[in-house]
Length: 252
Image 1 (tube, rainbow, N blue to C red):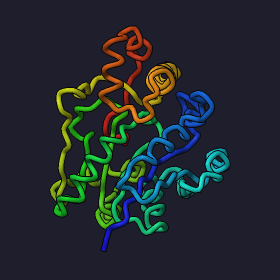
Image 2 (image 1 turned 60 degrees about the vertical axis):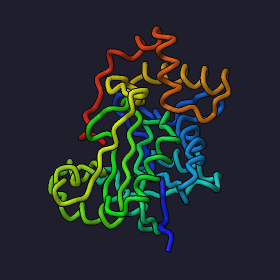
Image 3 (image 1 turned 120 degrees about the vertical axis):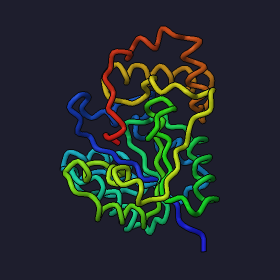
Image 4 (image 1 turned 90 degrees about the vertical axis):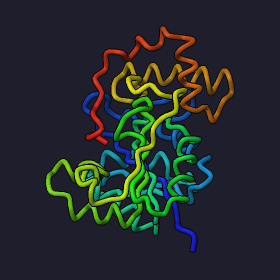
């Protein structure tokens, strides 16, 4: 029996550094809509779930996406992100979870497909990530986990921080799981590059990338390599957010 694969996007409007950041516009759509529309091209995924919170402020996310029949919406705890992702997966009968965060709007669809192929074809793997040993740019973070594995990790979570992040309890107990680190090839190896949406300057950079690759060059499915090529040809854009302090992997 084929296992059901679900992309689960953690999304909320609350942010101290950049409030309502996932609702900011890029062209005619929000950052979150842009991300969701591209993720519809992950051909191995059966479902896209946006897991937001029960905070009344996040009704804006529900209202934004409720008419999109290809997006499933779920609301759960704002603080206990681990339970939110588990709840979203359980309600939708997901066996394999592709865990993403909405502040990574430029996530590479080809990369997700490639990692999913590896995960599906190696049944002994319980947890696959490209971010534990960072080699890709920050903002290309993909974590793939069996539902049973994530459920097991909940029982191992002890601290408040363990519950605030989807895979922290797994990463603190790696000896208990069969995991695999997905390392970037040379073309996309740039761990210092920041492509996450944390600050206003990140938003400006992301808009420039989308404007040039998606609108001007009409590359709807532009990948990480395309972004790196563009930035190497146009290094002036790197100065936009070079000062921004990034979260560690523990914040995923």
